[in-house]
Length: 92
Image (cartoon, rainbow, N blue to C red; front, side):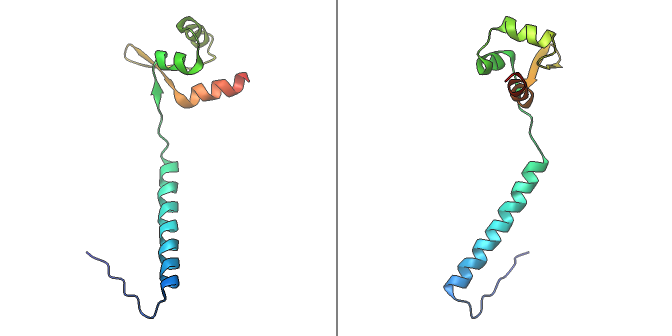
């Protein structure tokens, strides 16, 4: 299906404004859809240590003390980026 738009008696400025408003509406719709579906980035221990500039032993201690929650998938341990950022803001 193709949509046809016929522009009759429209100045260049009016056409520009129509296109501008249509693009704004479409971008707002896309932005709202992306905000409703947040993506969760998982980080490895090494990545978390690099971000926080700490030793793996410190990360292990913080995880054991439940200062920084971890998520296990099989034998691997991951940390959510959002939770790592929240941990930083809590400690400040």
